[in-house]
Image (cartoon, rainbow, N blue to C red; front, side, top):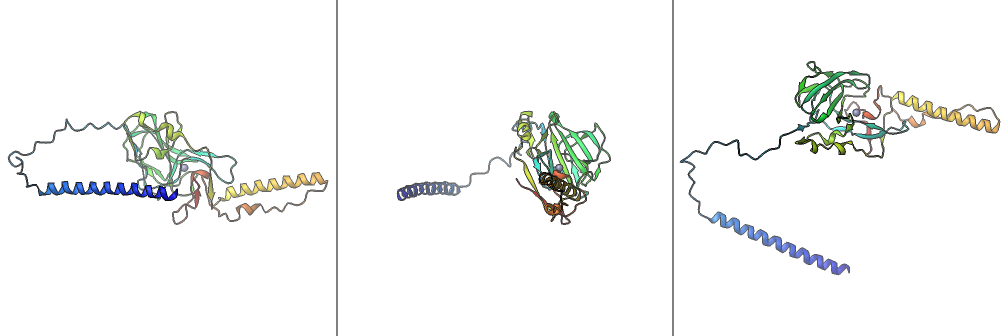
Length: 296
Ligand SMILES: [Zn+2]
């Protein structure tokens, strides 16, 4: 069986090779024939200069409804859009945007033409800017080190125009941009489906696709656990141990033993980090590389 199929396969390949070679030979022959043809006299190019390029009959280009570009050109997404879970969390939660790692002070640019709807500050997002675009889409730029001074609500802004600078304001571990795109109903969309693309019609916008995210929760593999989270985790473990000890003691009728739970065990290798945005940030080290990874 195997031999037969091999033989057939060999024959087929042989035939294909022959055909391909035949094609090459034929092409070569045509090329040679072309080359051998005597030079045709130059057309009347010298006599009459080429007519000016006419604008009207050029092939029709679809008008661009909206074009998106990277808010921090040349920088990559280090934390994607979607459901996440950190070790100390019970359920997953949605990372409503992407995190783009960059150096402090780097320009953050409008992802598309739009209008400034908000430029402000919040305790979690730090300094932020929100822009409104075609089709009711909005883009959101958070943790900025500074908002561009000239921005005013209602002001028109061009794609690529600086809206601020990279920073680490709000709840954030290191310089990065938290970037979101939302639809007209304020539902978060996956920005990676928009960046670097232009859309000629509203129907081209990947609205439904961008709203989807995997139902499985990605677990963040965190090598650095912030002190605050570590304390919470330890307290929780201690409480569990205590409750267990009390239950056991009640059953046996003895006094509850002194609990000496190694509550810190789970966080033994943890390194303290001053601030942490939870799932929204991959903390970066002094070398600028993320020290936490998200499994996908
Ligand atoms: Zn984020």
